[in-house]
Image 1 (tube, rainbow, N blue to C red):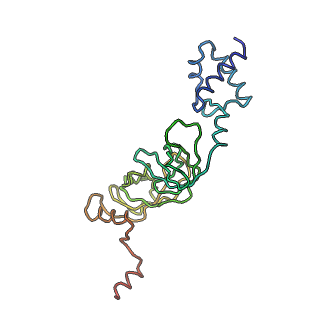
Image 2 (image 1 turned 90 degrees about the horizontal axis):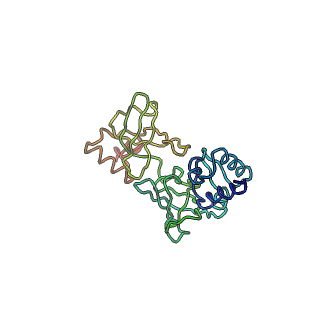
Image 3 (image 1 turned 60 degrees about the vertical axis):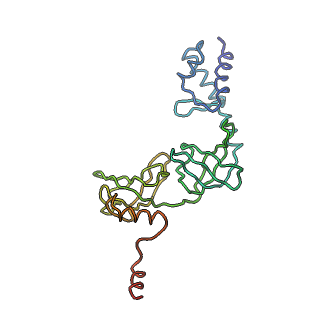
Length: 238
């Protein structure tokens, strides 16, 4: 088989599956007349020509990605998170809500204001997008139950739309104990796919107790259950 024939056969695989990443093994299954050495030479040639890209030992058609980027439209909207971890973006500049899969959310959370790009070439009935930037957080404080180990802890958020647990270093626990309900604040979250880091802001008490759960509900609905000393002093005067 000539190099040109190999090129056309291999290229056809990528062109017919333009959004798919292929491993060498997957390509070999689709090209039974090409051995592994021939295929590696062909892939190297396609890489040099700039026709395909290599990402994490898998290959994808390059021009598809470039076209997606050129055709993308930036929109601003609000995140409406689902319990599955995906979300819909509600935007005044879009006729309908835009679906964003969990892998394309870039650490955006429920209620956040974000900037998204529309993904072209999708076959879904609803438009699909990807979060490019989180413009404004809806909140950086979350209520949940602590799971404390020897050197660190995790806050398990009460909010079902919070898709990840919050990592809390031992020095940020403020003496909170395992099984207690607390208010924690996110202080750092730079890497996509990793848990945000937080610190305990307030200890509400043992999870499950009536007064603790009532406090949680009040805080979650925007009510304050503690006030600065000056406010308390003035109220005592009155």
